[in-house]
Amino acid sequence: MAKKSKIAKNEQRKVIVARYAARRLELKKALVDPNGTDESREAARVALQKLPRDASPIRVRGRDSIDGRPRGFLSQFGISRVRFRDMAHRGELPGITKSSW
Image (cartoon, rainbow, N blue to C red; front, side):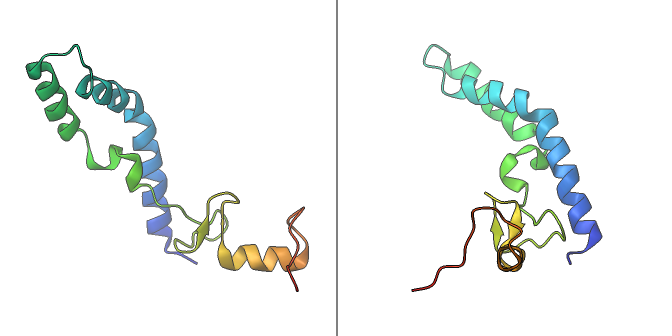
């Protein structure tokens, strides 16, 4: 079980990312605009740097949806590898079978 504070901080990051997503997209488009001037690109770069650090989606950590485990996260299922294995053995994941040969 992860610390409650780490889980809460990660949830807050998700909120900040969502809040600034449109602004980041607009600035990123301005950076690569072939019709833009050098001054407009420079202004977009500076504005992008002035956004909060947690506004970047790369700062959101993938965590197990049940207990918050940060490592071994399987994004396709939203759970950690440990929980995935347990749930698969108990038959709680439809279509998942243990391989044997």
